[in-house]
Amino acid sequence: MRFLLIALTALVSVGCAAAPELSDSRSDVMPDAQPSAEELCQAGRAYSASGESEKAVAALRRCLQDRPNSAQAHYQLGLELSRQGKSKAAIDELERARQLDPKSRETALLLGMTYDLSGETEKALSVYREGIAKHPGDPGLLHEMGNSLLVLGRSSEAIEAFEQAASKKTSADLLGDLGYAYLVAAKNEKALSVLGRAAKLAPERADIALNLGRAGLAAGKPAVAAEALESLTRLDPQNSQGWLLLALARIRLRVFDKAEAAARRAIALSEKSPKAYFLLGVALDALGHRKAAHKAMLRAIKLDPKLSAARKWLKKK
Image (cartoon, rainbow, N blue to C red; front, side):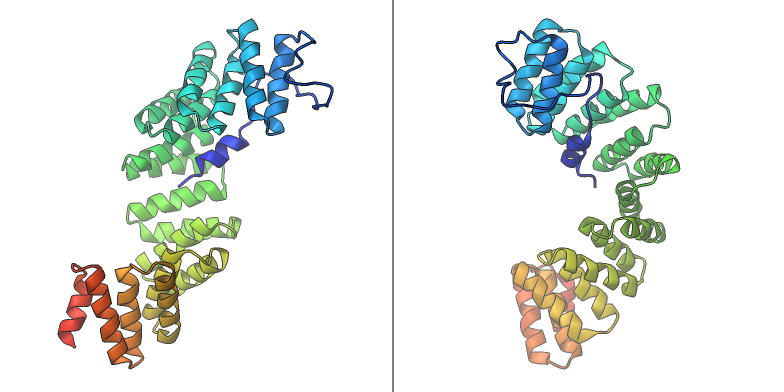
């Protein structure tokens, strides 16, 4: 899924003029200079850009004292509060900005994302739908609406939204989310194709590599899965799920010594993983280490008494 906090940081403000550079001579929103509302808005942006969040908020609040109906200032303040993790306060500002400027695409996008971050997914979905009604085919709004639909378990609708967005704009983020939606909907071949494209666009993305590995396993292509998961474990060596799935892919490829190594790495990172012990047992059994395999299977059962695959193995042996 999407990294909404990163996306919030990437959003730019609208309506204010270019922010001036900060200087040591200006302190705490220029208290002696009697700045205008426009200057306060610019100062808020400048403080935000330099990471001085509290000063940014103070400047923007002072701006709104002089110009309470400034949609741009409400938007900018909402953006800054979102970055601070103050979702409720941010939503209040953004709802006011939307009321003052109902056609703003940026406000709809940020408000929906903030609702998503605060767990109010239905409200986020409503905001995106209203935004799309005013901006038909907007890829950003369609993309975020797709994410909300996925959270709500409506994968078919999410896929439709992602596909519409992808017809307008292509990015690793969008293709990654579309591929994940295909995976959730068990459209494994489509997931494999789209996630493969996403991985080529962003080979540094561990989350895309993980989902590509999952898609490869689900589509019955363990070689593709193993390649993706090996990439993942290089990008994120502490990812226990990646090592676990890599062990499975290597077992399906019948490369049992490497499967054993991957399973042991998964156990080292997650000592209470019954699946990792089960896969270790399978690999050890294939390598002829029956006693060690039996011990691994018993450990898997102890961690998860309902693990039927391990119970079946023990009965056969």
